[in-house]
Image (cartoon, rainbow over all chains, first blue to last red; front, top):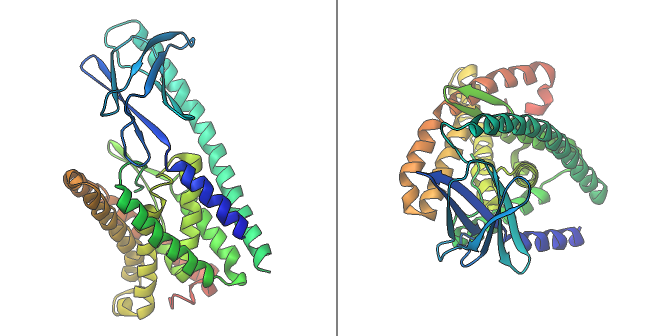
Length: 144
Length: 200
């Protein structure tokens, strides 16, 4: 039991520096905000933008507030933020592009992604229930 | 009604994590072997409740069921909700790991307070159905207020967001109360021994 608690504490401390990415779009500009779980901005972190085929479109560094901006592109993008020392995160983003033929393709991808996500949610729910049962089963064994 | 990572200040994270740890240890100390199955089931109920979405106009709300979990588990409610919150954060991305302590206080503390309130017999003056409605309504109200308070403590800019959270969760509180009435009625018929500790 003590070993479990120690291991769990190690995992918890490692999550203290988890990198988060928040992407928004406003007036033709995409804003990429990267910050650590403690709330501290990811300053001068390497930001790479890829298209759907993993081709590098743009590369730069976040500013002192953790922000990186780029102009809206008419296709989905993959954003990768590298804070160094093994801290890296990736996020997908589908920009809103009005009155272009790509809007229909983007909406189709969004519907497909929602369908895929609903299947993975059910799987995660079942996995969560199994883990809850397993945790309390182990707890009962340890106590007896 | 979960707070994500990066919202709360470091001081709040440390303080709520420390208090949460003490409460989980308190639950572990009071855990009896015979009740482990019930604790496991209630943890699963809380975990699944977040999947029950009810469309409400432009938004979707989800149940939390902390009232029922609280009156059935009593002192060990902190352990049950802690396990469910941890898995929700890791598997589903609801809430966060650094804000686990804060989310535990938001969810489990109202459940425990409701248990103490019901056991004291204060609500026995009212009709049965009103009492059962309060078991669902009040913990949801307390959870919303605690969440609003934590957000305001984290950053004063969240003040108006806190008011909005309280207003938008009023339908959740009412629905929780109504669902709890049916659930407790069913438990009284099917498994009345479960409600013995809560003196219902």
